[in-house]
Length: 423
Image 1 (tube, rainbow, N blue to C red):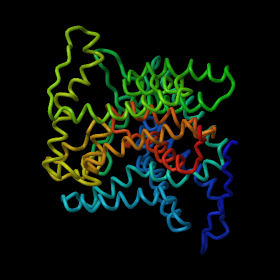
Image 2 (cartoon, one colour; image 1 turned 30 degrees about the vertical axis):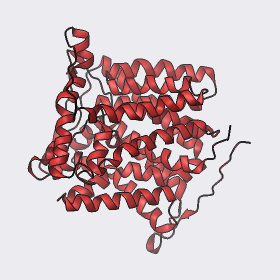
Image 3 (cartoon, rainbow, N blue to C red; image 1 turned 90 degrees about the vertical axis):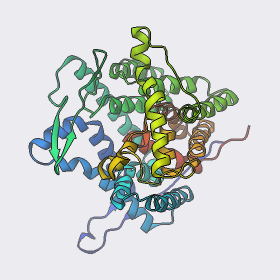
């Protein structure tokens, strides 16, 4: 018997002079979600045009709205158990970060960075209520991102390579770069990585959700050429492995071994650089194009990051929340800026939470397997996106990619709401 979830959303009550403006919480949640995704998806173009009129700060308002909504939900109703444990965990490791002299400003900025993740976690009940609107939003984001990539292939977009100043800091509005002469197109987004991740998440979700074969075919025909056009290997790998997971989803044991194996490999490779030196054969142009950046991670980025965690924190418990990622890029103390990029989600988590990071990554694999086992259409559509997230985690700090952060928060809480059938 299929498990049904029926939730009625209460109105968002605004007191005082604003009392006449009553907004249903579900409508507000979907509106904020649309602002977050669309602003990030169009970030390259928006930063270019907003900076021309001195309104470039508006690009950060959707994340602020996420935090407002999260605080409102915390104050208004009892917390979901999963979300409560998330907050408790973050609070604990924020204390560890404080002990390791991570600045309070860095910790506040880290909360701002992961606000889409927290927002996704508190929005699940509203997504269930407004499922059709959520699906339409992801479809719009997917097809508009694809359009931007196609235009970038054939046209010279004005925001490509744009740099501007904000509060005395130089901000990269849209990255223009190439690999071995091959341009990495980003369309309307700020970077090719962002465009690829929006395409991957949209493609895997919509393909799983749609029932029409023609709709599925349309998603495939749009997704593969545009994702490959971005040349982002994390996105391409996520797309391929996400669809591979869908193909074996009817074989639960094989799926479970594959998903857990993917998570284990994502954690094992960077940590293995402590005890083993790698040498990648780059003797031909193809291997250089495909593996040069990966070799740099194996030889430089990952070993150096592990050494820096031990230097500024503790090898067992890490540096603490706020001690890694973009937070230290802008609010670091001297050489701690070396922890700004981990290029691996397991290492990013390790910097924040120490050795428990491996357990966290395996838990994300458990979330993916749980979603696959559900009979809920929405849950099963989120499942391959979680596989893509694990695949992209090998070479990306995915929590700082807004679309992955949002879906990760949704998936974790959603996995606690569903009933998995017993076989």
